[in-house]
Image 1 (cartoon, helix red, strand yellow):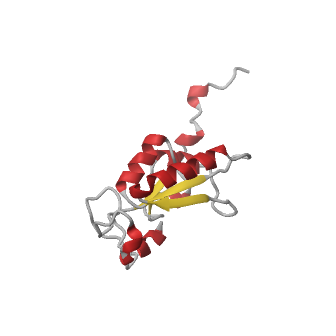
Image 2 (tube, one colour):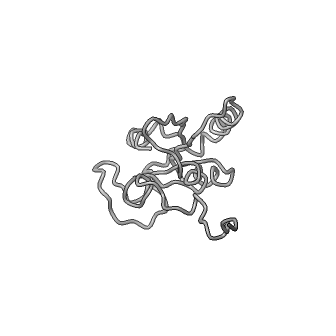
Image 3 (cartoon, one colour):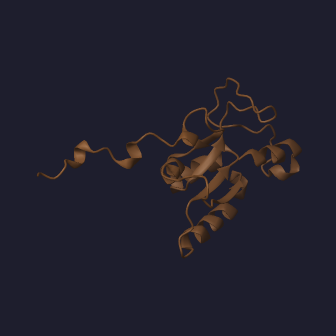
Length: 142
């Protein structure tokens, strides 16, 4: 019998995403590296290596990523919770799995609302959010 045609068999990544990653199933917006990293992950029983921050904490985040990637055995899956668009963009450019809060989520009521933003935007101008009470609390949603 002839070997199956590889082009006729769709790759696993082309399969539909797990239920928890489908639109309206999560309040997270995963960047492409995160979507690839989590496509085959079963959340139940999986240990997630996670940190979060803003772009003002980029040095900390890069240091954490270095040690996660250097660890033996490999720490997987891992994820950076991006509390601002600049950190999400930087992680995407570095090929780092990252997630932000979807812009439709009202973080105080957990209801979806209409918006034109790409990711959730915090309300303060503080670069280091610890000094702004509501933004610091909203960070817990990631």
